[in-house]
Length: 245
Image 1: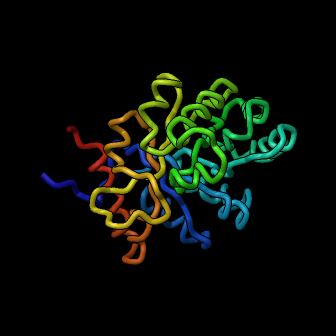
Image 2 (image 1 turned 180 degrees about the vertical axis):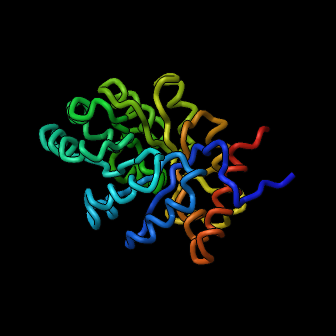
């Protein structure tokens, strides 16, 4: 029997919705349309620089879902500690830092925000193997991501961001207690890959051991057809993820 898409879903899907818009009213509308479907809302650097703490608070006032503050901090330890303190009042569930910033930097963030899952970003999913080589990593993307994940978690990170292609190896390295968050996923019925170079479907990522998958445009592009269309698209993808294989 098909789901009545007008009714709230009883179980939220492990989706992190990327709220990538320069219009705060639109962002709030996206949250309202998907609040019973989406587990986490990702607010990135552009959002934060445009709307600041007030923008984050406007989102949190409209949802009980967790907030993923995706600032990808990368600086000396003292500066990152200060930045982490500066967002502490927002109480994000997740705050990203670049794992390549090193152990001291990651530890500084974790110490500054003990109630937040400091999240180590390994190798950006927009990077190809050629890009990784050009940047100067001595290993390929997989080995580099595993190395960075181990470094980050040893320094106090409680979550990791990685490509879906690295999930299995990173899970084996960091164990079951670490949250793995995976961008670079595209529903099977999505033809384009946008700016992601290393992708798989959300269900495949969850099957490989990811706890959460980051999805943006495959859901939010339906907003052009209205809130209900976006909500229905979110439910379709949630059903794809939650289906039993």
